[in-house]
Every structure is written in structure tokens, then in C-alpha cells.
Length: 375
Ligand SMILES: Nc1ncnc2c1ncn2[C@@H]1O[C@H](COP(=O)(O)OP(=O)(O)OP(=O)(O)O)[C@@H](O)[C@H]1O
Ligand SMILES: [Mg+2]
Image (cartoon, rainbow, N blue to C red; front, side, top):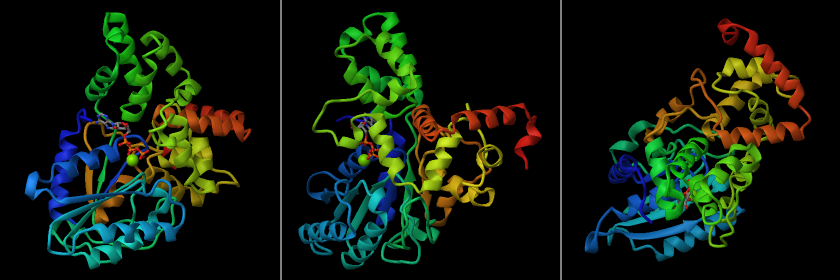
């Protein structure tokens, strides 16, 4: 499949792989981590210079033992050190991050010619291990630990954080997938552009939306996607797609299940913010005895790391080596929830019976002039 946009990200990942033996591609569900990793690895060489490439999918795995078994099977199929360059793609690791870090540390130490690309919705963390320190870009020191997933220190490497597609690329993607009829008139094209705006540059959302266009006019699709539940529930009946990618609801549920109860609660409560907000705003509106104010900064940062709270930087991923990984999660930056994430959080808030109370607190916050966000 041809990638739309992502030229800079593909080049950046290629560069990182020349310098570093372990690169983690992170970003929210459906942003295109696996697609980018496959594309960049595919460009590492042609013909005899092409590395041996293996992919291990961790999506179906639940136990550490199964993670290690899969890595051991991959190791047996990999060429011995020094014989031929090899790249291992370890895909979908956020739910078994600790075991993956642990297993990769051993593997990288044993196979000195091996390079590894990991995809994960959250950064893997890491720290003291030196197994991956084979090149310049790995010199950033210990990567940030953390995220909702508990993990141990592991091999250091670089992290490429993938942001949603730029608006033009997002439109180009939806148009490339849409049937000819949908683009036949101005009204159809306008509806598709408006649909792209609502989907906020998420390639998975564009693919799901495009699949509806076989039986639905663009204006009707736009109307469905304009409703929060409609946007979450649009589904693709495609057994070859991973179950977590057949709707945005399934994709967000996958992320939600990885969070701690406090992170889930803050996600739900932050859904009352209509636009951008900062940590002090979240503390003012969302803290109570169930979510005490002193605990809130750590929970807030965890949601940033996991892409639930987004710092929008459209049009290109950002590479973060080692210790610099924490810079992207600075709590003083304004954050927002992209539309589907907010819709999912709001549903949780309603389910918890807290919608009225927290909408009211948000209204009070709205009434306070700017200094209200500085306590
Ligand atoms: N730049 C792109 N151009 C065209 N299609 C894309 C692009 N990026 C992603 N896609 C497609 O969008 C869908 C989601 O992408 P992908 O599976 O890579 O997301 P992901 O970030 O790995 O998601 P998850 O977190 O669920 O693993 C896939 O069908 C993929 O082929
Ligand atoms: Mg993936």
C-alpha cells in the first residue's frame, strides 16, 4: 500500500535506523505506526543489500512468557551475527511493553548485527541497559520510564513520535480511497473535506470512513460522523483487519483498557473541556477525593504519554532520543482531546453518572478569567 504523506517521517525513521539499533515508533491508535515502520524498513536496501526482515505481531499475546517465546522463535529464524544485516519489527507492544523491553535487551546483546523497530501506542521507557547503544543517536541516555503500563528499565534507543497527518494529506488519503462517484461533484468533495476535519488526520479513521462510501453518499457520511457516537461506531466488516481497528470505538477501547483507574477517570472528566486546557485547569475542574489534586500531575502526564491528551503538532513526527523523551510530556503545554477521544471520554463520564457535576465545574472554570489557570 502506498503511504500518503509521511515522507519526512519515513526518511527520519530510516536515518534513526542507520544510527540506532532500537527505534520505537509511538503515537495514538490508528495514526499509522505499523504502516510507517513497514515502509521505512522496506526502504533500507534493495536486492543483495536489503536486510533480512522479520515481523513479530504482539497484538494477540497477553503473557510475558508468550512474548519471550515469540522473540525466541524470531531469534532462531534470524541470521547469525555478522552474516547479514537483519531488522526485526516488533509490532503492537503497548500492552506487553515490560516483557518486550526485557526480551529485546537479551536479543540485542546476543545478536550484535540486529536492528529492531518496535511499534507501541506508548513509549516503551527504558534506562540502564546498554545493549542497544550501537550508534550516535542512542547517546541520549536513559529514556523516560512510565506510561500506564508498568515496565522495567530496558535497552535505550530512539523514539519517533508520530503525529496525525497534515490536513492536505488527510484529504488526499480520503480522496484516494473514495469511489469515483463520491468525488463527482463539488458538494461531494466539500462533504469529504469536512469529514476529514472531523477525523483529525487519523489514517485509520479515514479508512473506516472511506469504506462507508461504497453504500453511502458523502453528505450522509458527514452527517453520521458529525454525531459523537456515529464517529465512534462507524465500523468495517473486514475480517482481515485486526479487531481493534474495525471501529474507532474498538481502537479507543484498546487504549482505555491499558490505563489505570485514575487515568481512565481523568480521561472521562477532561472530556468536559471544549478546547485546549492545561494541567492547572484539569486540577481545578477534575480533582476531588477520588482523584486527589497531588496525584493529578502524574496522571495527566501519563495521559499525555499515551496520546489521550494531545499536543498538536501536525505535519510530521518528532524523533526523541533517550532522556529527551520526557520533553514532549511537559505539563505546562496546552493540550486537547481529538474529537473521537473526547467523545469516548464523554461516554465514560455519562456511564459514571458524573456528567452533570463536571460540566458544571467546567462552566465555573470557563467563567474565571485567565489567572484561573495559574493556581
Ligand atoms: N500515510 C498513510 N497513507 C495511507 N494509509 C495509511 C497511512 N497511514 C496508515 N494508513 C492505513 O491506516 C490504517 C491504520 O494504520 P496502522 O495500522 O499503521 O496504525 P497504527 O498506528 O499501527 O495503529 P495501532 O495502534 O492500532 O496498531 C492501516 O490500514 C494503514 O494501512
Ligand atoms: Mg500498529
